[in-house]
Length: 401
Image (tube, rainbow, N blue to C red; front, side):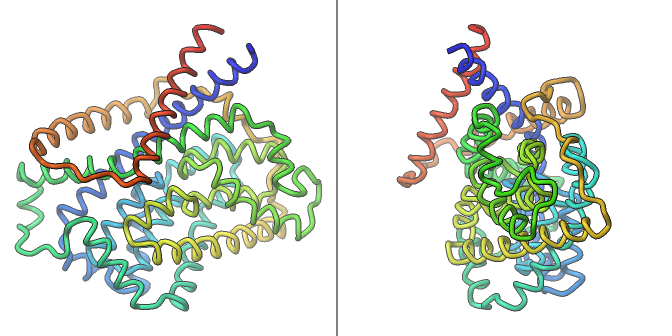
């Protein structure tokens, strides 16, 4: 019983710790998304990223590089870009860059894994974008893109900008920032249930699931010289493992370290890290944004390119004799999450901003009717409430043990 309580407490602390690491990135991503939706006109977005040429893709990649590393927040920003008129390829380039090429993600990878994974993340991230560009260029039906954009514009309630004031005027006005606060709260309202469930499940897996499970799941893990078919199988299993352990691109890294310490190949780990955009919570959000047809198309494209990129990175590193040693991995449950560092100050800043936006938004929405929740949303709400109870109980067990 004491062992269970110890694991229970550890799982709750790990879930909350991982969310603590990523909260400021959520806030930053949603703030950027909200500002784009309010301040950037559709005409300007079409001019800069409306086509799928090298300049637009480069801009999408650059904007992603300087944006959030949180998958949920990146999804919202990508939707904002696409709705405003950006082409699908530049928008997806932004999405891939914002979850693979950002600086803070490289810092976390270096802390939990090794420098080879940092190089693999950045070089592989660029490879993902180039492969995505090629695959979408060859396979995307034009009608599918048009239908997805119409669906996204209907969801945001903005088919066009009309007589929107100049952004310089709007950004200095109270009304402009009121709209930003409203959009910011809407972004959180759309995904908080998925986020809560995802982080809770991740903590449970980190604390309760034995390492032998991952060794069994990733065929050939621990082998000194795995063959091509073992490497391929581990690369295919990476997205499957990510499906059950998903918490976003930053939160996946500690769990990737668990896999790495159990001998999973470089290709399998890279595929696992890249898989933050091909799991069910993301698929569900993409379907809300663009409709199921486009969501499934994007899922197929991302699965194809991440597997190809992971294999290319693995064998490229093997040729250069740069494959990492698994003894360098650190255990996620042994990490000190809560301490005085940049994360604390960033989280406090975004928490104050979020509470302020929430209060402002509540004042503006008084008397507005709420839409009836769907059966799926009600089920997710129930699971999220169960997750909160689990986390609360886990923290209380710390007093018992």
